[in-house]
Length: 347
Ligand SMILES: Cc1cc2nc3c(=O)[nH]c(=O)nc-3n(C[C@H](O)[C@H](O)[C@H](O)COP(=O)(O)O)c2cc1C
Image (cartoon, rainbow, N blue to C red; front, side, top):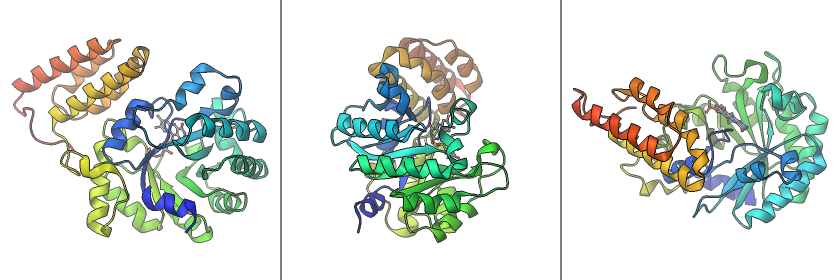
């Protein structure tokens, strides 16, 4: 068994990198709910090389974060390798894996030759993986999309490229870059890559429920999965997936899900508000300015909660943790008078 086989045998259900979302607070909550590993949002290798403080902040750990996955982006093999090495030293034993972003389609990334642009330059992509993998001792993975242009599937060749250049696994989001998020993710391409490559394949795209996760594993044979949007305002999804995996396959990796409250259950409105409040406080503890990020998180948490639309309007004018506390109190108060009440669950 290679070190990476061992890694994947314990990290089956992971939080995907999400810019502006997967910060310390969100990673902590998802890990507590059973994500076996959580990735940072993408970190610019170039930004790190300029010793840019705001970039370096993205690899901050929360107190007690044992292991983290760090995703880097860029297109200069040397810069990426140097910065991967710096990250490994800086995180001093807490780095589980370096992932290389070869899938981000947004113009400010792909337009500069980073992210999904590398799908169109597999020779450069190969050099990047090779250089980064030669510079760090942790496994290096590649996260990509089904292909760049609609209808032109390249991820199977890309998986072979990743394998030959020293990647320990490849994560595939089953949409073309030009699709952005339109349409449904195609899981067939993940199955085809799994068939063609000898390295582990990590499936990604459209996992919003435990049932989706089971189907992604079963229909593709993938070795692990990454969950992104499904976890927004819903860290409980990891506990639900782990419970379903346990029930179906009898094992769900090493996540701390046995510590989760009512593992696998859907949260009540009150539990949603409690989690949102905790999230706001974690963000505030990390950096009081970061708490404005809570506007979007809070809106996600209260999805389906009676009184959510008034609460959303209130969240949008919150700037401090006290503002959020007042908005949560007001929502709880409204909830106590609502016919649906605080109980019942929201799936
Ligand atoms: C807000 C947001 C930010 C994202 N940021 C990143 C990122 O930094 N790096 C990356 O590789 N993918 C990023 N993604 C893509 C996700 O990791 C994932 O591949 C995609 O959302 C499909 O998975 P899902 O259907 O579970 O959401 C982002 C997605 C969202 C919604």
